Image 1 (cartoon, helix red, strand yellow):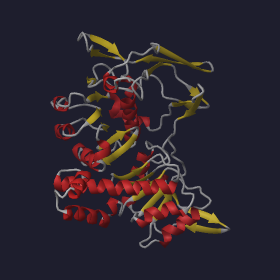
Image 2 (tube, rainbow, N blue to C red; image 1 turned 90 degrees about the horizontal axis):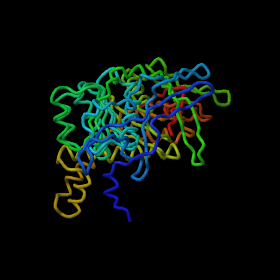
Image 3 (cartoon, rainbow, N blue to C red; image 1 turned 90 degrees about the vertical axis):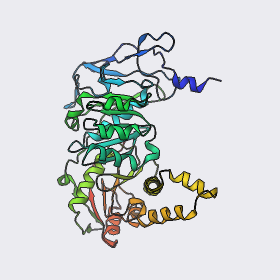
Image 4 (tube, helix red, strand yellow; image 1 turned 30 degrees about the vertical axis):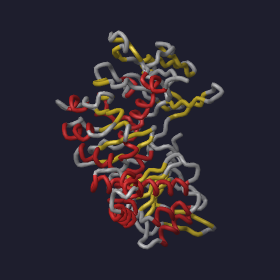
Length: 430
């Protein structure tokens, strides 16, 4: 049997070509393979290596950057050369290669930027795990943004990829160095911050120099490839987020059997702000998905489920468990599961756990007062009812279901009333 530990440590050779050329009709795109210098394990000499491996050890992988060709199809002009972000990371920008990056490290970083490009107006942090956010948050400072993104799900953030949209400062770097992450990405690093982060020898510390212009990418399309198991390929345009401000939302209205149904309560400014924030985060979450967000911070993130009511319930479960863990960590400095174990072993007073459980239930896992976000319409009102039961005050989803009128009725019947808006677009991501 192969030594799995050794496989995880091995940086594979790959046999992909140095250049890749893709032709769309008479238009040609040219890509170059990326590599970085790392010390050889045996000789200590510096050698050129590409990605560590693919999604798993044993899978060769390569990263390519577009260097030539401007693609225009059906009146859509796609991102051209010279605008690389993750694909253009240079030797100088790989400030510490750590265990040397693999495919997952870079796809996590890329999806973090896919979210942050909509959140550039103030300090924000996104922590990714398996190409989904574990926590995303705004902050008055970068340190606050990171702290809020981390605490919402400390468990999933372990070993994740952090991307921040402002220069890494000393306060934030000190906080990051206390936790275990695989990757840190920032547009710049202030003096001494790299040394602080290098306390974690295996951490990949990366500067993406064009991140300060990330907002420019929000209206740019790229060619999205999906490879099939039979060797075929599906090609599509990347999606665009149509919601830039509260003005882009549609009032939730539906007609059923000649009767018009309309949500009665208008959103507050605070709710609108969280709707815009939540729909931005939704662009980077695998569908089916339902999110709960509050005060510019994710509360619960349900991803990749097959049914909408199920993912709404999963997001509730995650919110409750992560909220209890946050309370426990703040009060006792240990994870909730450790507290639970120690209580079960008789090493800690059961009242400690009971107190946290009661507070979590009272606060409904932080969902109370939040905005519920769904990447597609609710086919039945049962999904909406899940959020209303937990105390959401507002709901945002694409609209377009034959039963939208039921969801509108649910909002109007709620006490206090819940507001709802439509985005007019779906945000599936597979």
